[in-house]
Length: 227
Image (cartoon, rainbow, N blue to C red; front, side):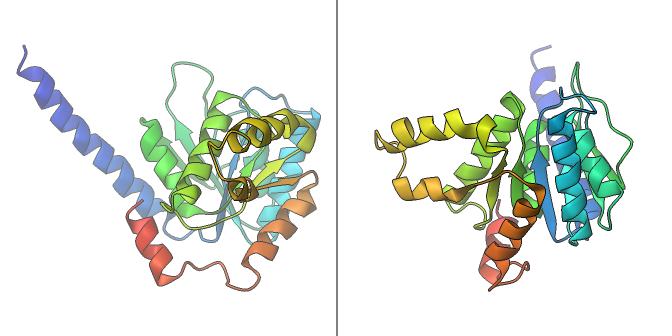
């Protein structure tokens, strides 16, 4: 019985590899893409839902593939907006015991068993991170993006918080505690931008890439290869 555990662990590695291979093959042509995060619990017809849908529609019409977690709530709103725009609506779905089910607005749909493989693909394809109001999962993705950019493990990119009133308390805490007590440099607060309107989000991304274009440099390609 004890010998079965290492054998199962070894076979599990092949499953993880298979997720990476399939996702890489399926997502190779979706650039430029933006990764969008937000709560699974927001209902259609609410202001946050409409904000997500409108933002994704503008991003899609601007030529971006729009990538979400593929589930309900703001993920659905994001995919819906992109689906009815000119770009691709992409869903990176995750198998969960509860709460997650795939929405129907996905031109490209993948299903992951492991959070970490899914998170790698969000980072690999992104030219920007768009973070809408959300809970633990959304915060996890936000700080993952900040850490990757801060440490140089991915290329510099816009990380945009949408709807300032929702994020105000967190931003104040980051300024007062993280930067104020020296846990991060004050300049690292500049990794974050805050936008309130969908068009501001689109404009912020284009402003960031205005002088360099969306294609990664050779050095950035190497960084992404080793993400």
